[in-house]
Length: 600
Image (cartoon, rainbow, N blue to C red; front, side, top):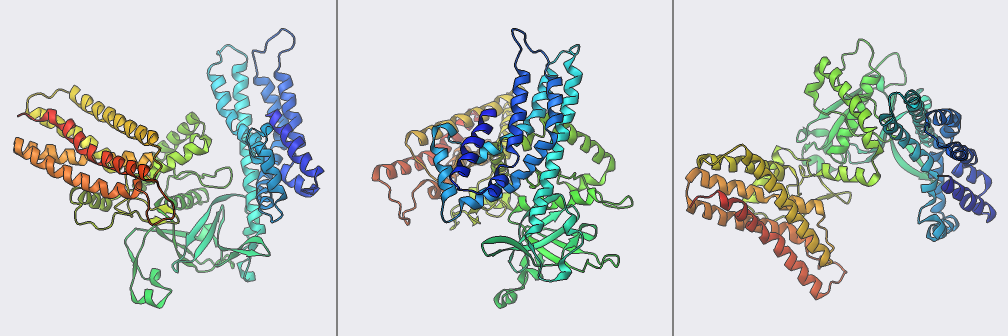
C-alpha cells in the first residue's frame, strides 16, 4: 500500500506536473488529499513493527487509534474518487492524447507491474472495505482471556462506522455531480427537493412507451426522468418529464403479455397494428397533492432492458416505500435500502410478494438477512468483479418461465419442424431464455437430472432391487459423469485450439439436455416393461437429440463463412469433428446411463 501510494505520488502526480501535462487544479482533483493519506499509512507501519527483539501480540489498540485518526482524511479522499475517475477518463479521451500516452507508458513500464493509475488511487478505498472481514477473523481466533478480544470488537465497530461515513459522503458526491449536470426545459421542473438529495438509490436506462431512451435517477426522495445530451462536449441530463416526489409515487408492476394500448403509440403503422404485449414493463405515476405545488399528475410506462433490470428497479422502489413510509402507511414489503459504494443498487433481497404480507415472517426474514450479511461480511459487495460477473452469468440461465419450459421440451423432443435456431440479441447481449426458446438454460437440465434419479429408483423398485442408497448412487453417478464429460470436451477444445462462441456455461447447458431423453426412454420402458419399446424410444431420442444439438451448436462452433475472417482447412475440419463429437456423444451417454436398468 505504502509503495503503491508513493509510486502514484512520485511518478504519476509529480511526473505529470513536471511535464505540464496537467495543471495544479486538475492534479488536485485527480489525486485529492493523497499527500495526507500516505503519512498515515507510514505511521501505521511504524507502529506495527516490533521494537528491538520484542514481538507484538496485540493489534487492536493500534488499529483502534489509527482508524480514529484517519476518519476525516479517508472520507475526503474516498469521496473525491468520484470526481477523480470522471476527470481522469475525460483527460484520457482528449484529442492531444498526452495524458493517455503518459499513462500507457507508465503502465507498460516494469515499476507499475502492469497496473493502471486508477488501481493505485482506488487501493485505499478497496483496502478499507476488507478491514471488517480481517478483524472479524482475528477476533474469532483470539482467546477469550486475551486483552485484544474486547478491543477488536470496538475496532470493528469503528471501521464499520468509517465505511458508512465514506459511503454516505460518496453517495452525496455522486448526487451533487448529477444535479450539477441537470438541464431544465422550464422553471416548473425545478423541484424543491432536487438540490437536497444526498443518496442515489438506482439509476439506469429505461424506455418510454414510444421507445425513446430515458436515463432515470431514483433518489431517496424524488425520481427524475432525463435524456442524455451533450453540449460543447460536456455531458448533461435534460429533464423530459416533471419530477415525482417519492411521497406521492405509485409503481404498478405489469405482467408480461398484457396488451397495453400505450405501447402502440408513436408511428402510424404501429398504431394500426393494435395493442402491443408488455415485456419487462412497469408503470410509474404520481398522485396529485395540493400541499405540493411542484407535484403534478403524471403517468409513464417504462420498459427495462430485461427481467433482471426490471426486478432491480422494483426492488429499489419498494425499498424506498419502506424507508419513507409514514407510521399509518399500509405498505408491506420486505425490502431494505440497498446502496452500493458507487450508487448502483445491490441485488434484490426477496421477490416473492405473498411472503411479504406476513409481518412476523418479515421480521424473521429480516433477522436472517442481517445475520447472513454479518456472516458473509456483505459477501456480494466484497466479491471480486470477476466473481460478480460469474454469478450474474449463471443467473441468466435460470431466467425461465412455464411457457419457455413447454416450448423448449417440444423443441428438444420434436425438433424437425423448427426453422429458426439462432439466438436473439438485445443491445449485443443474448436475451434471457424466457424470451428466446433457443437460448440455453440450466433449469431443464437440473430438473431433468433430478427426475432421472427418481425414475431410475422407481424402475429398480419394480424389479425389487431398490434400496435408499440407490438415490445417492444415481445422483453421484450423474454428477461424476457430467463432470467427466464437460472436462474431456473442454480439454479437447483447448488442445485443438478451437475458439468459438460456445462458452463453458453454454456447453454445460447443452450437455444437460440429454437427461430429457433419458426420462423418455426410462418412462417408455417403465410403462410397457418391453425391451423393444426401450430400444425404439432410444433410437428416436438419439435422432431427435442429435438433430437438436447439431442445429444449435453449429451456429456456435462452426465459423461464420459470411464474415471476412478466414479459417484454414485443418482448423475448420477440426471444428466439424468437434461438433460431431459433442452431438453424437449424447446418445452414447443416454444408452450407457440407462442400460443397467433394463432387464432383458
